[in-house]
Length: 407
Ligand code: HEM
Image 1: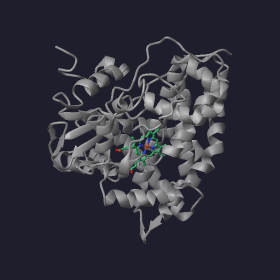
Image 2: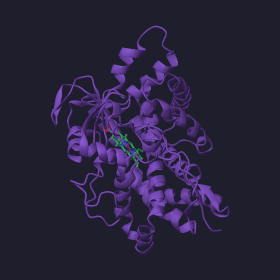
Image 3: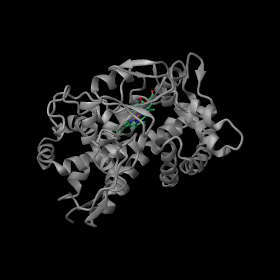
Image 4: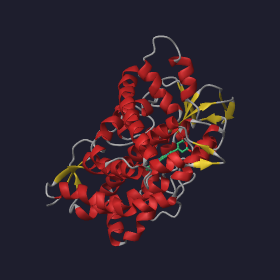
């Protein structure tokens, strides 16, 4: 039996290093039906790019799930409520609902809001590095990337500093809802608990911001207007949860995976150290080489022919950004890390209507955080301990990233 008879992106090997399996799929079966996941896997750059721009590949996948599975007696009301919040996320909507929410969020999440946080990113990074600098060992995910990105988005939203530590617990639990399988009911119950606590917390914060607006993202969301339209109270809360979640899970993984790639490629690390302005291109290359968005899910809204296969209405499709980003038809020597690569396009932030709204913020955070850790932790190196990765289809990131350095 060859690996392609029953390829499993969640096998231990593929979770640790998905690229050999993704390359085999891309070469041998680029539009692959997986019996195991009852889903399609699309792996070539041109196909993934085209599908992401094609509205027949629908993002509206929470509402159909709720209608089919949750709108019946006996469903845990907490789970139903949690999926209700996800249903208000623009990332799970098609036009015209998506267009409306995206316009309103764009009014609040402006380049100015990102620019305002810029100096704080370096300060927060330094505070976190101060804590570990004298110890010689750290977990760059848990001690650095995660608290950094969580603090940045919480500060932008206007969450009081003393409450920020609570977000990690909530966010960890919600991960099971967003990145886990839709049929995983234990994770759903736990995720729903996290969602209930977080939405209750945010609801109080939204009330306080309605009474006393501040110069932050939550106030901007409350007052965002487009042609007389505005976000409802529940939509402000759901969008707050989306930003907190989208704003740091993924960016944590870009910083973690990016630092790992540089530690594994000392020549590229030395090149960056010798020429710090290369960091902008380096971040794009790290996103391409081992980015956080392993696959992007869609639900077929119509029958579509692709490379001789028929993707039928109602079927699920995983558009494999990580495979597309290493397609040799598009990138020369795609498995090599080259921070000076001229071709900087990748599908790491998606493409089309749902192109990542937080891309400028994510790029900025990585461009500050990655060099700062390399500068401030002399002799930074991996410890040789086996790395453990999140066992999920949609995202790629380490559970912990143990490192050692001189002190
Ligand atoms: C390296 C970090 C990040 C990566 C790799 C990433 C990746 C993505 C991808 C692939 C999508 C498209 C999803 C789809 O087509 O279904 C997306 C959408 C989105 N991202 Fe990001 N993201 C990152 C950081 C952020 C940050 C920092 C924020 C905000 C604070 C953010 C907010 C959003 C939002 C709101 C959407 C939905 C856009 C829409 O549906 O129109 N992301 N992101």
